[in-house]
Length: 341
Image (cartoon, rainbow, N blue to C red):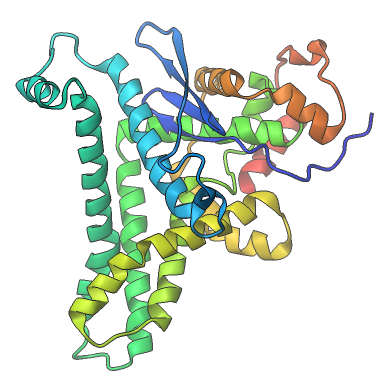
């Protein structure tokens, strides 16, 4: 049967974790981790957001704020889970762990995770939102044009973000994390191209995806430049407060843009998505087949990709297609073409 053109995304998303991949499909999520002994451990669970069941989670621009918060919470949870396989067993429970458990009634780990998440957000706000403002304020005596100062502040913000991404990519552990990030994208792209989910098909798929969190962060930077360009006040203290207060607004707008990018493919969407997708060349790396196997386990635990392909492309998966075969020169060329897109 002739394939139908894909008119919608698969709706699944995820993130890389330590030696593994987390995939989420609505309220269900799975974490697949390659353990030190080489086996793949898969945990499947349900995650309800902070406003689960509320109409606010369906309202444009507002839903993006809660989605961002939930992503941080689930991200920290799954990272901690994957790290647990690589912790030194002899370390044991620390005095701090015991004290927190005693005070919180056994919820010490959750409290520590919440504190870590909040601290990470505060650091991110300080480095990527407030630091560019303070650096730009040093130029007030030399640059009198407010519009030019706003552009300079935005440029500094993007440069700091790029320096951060490039800097951490040089770390060995982060490089492997970026490889698993690439494996996550390749699995989603394989399915959304209508290909059976096999190692062979995943490896020849692109590691770049329009709904990536990297693209979302770029949109956050871009939207902040536009908002701070038009919203101006003279009082320095109010300027700082505005930059903090507008973070939910920026996140809400950025979420709607990334959501639109995942659902449409017109020329306008391709243009605004291009910078974020270029940035993904830094935050994703080509995985090996063992990493792809882990990502596939995570996908299959929460998503029936065979039903998705049948409903979207109009054909059933033949089991004979599930046999992996060596690459052909033509398919290698296609893979290289996908990488360039």
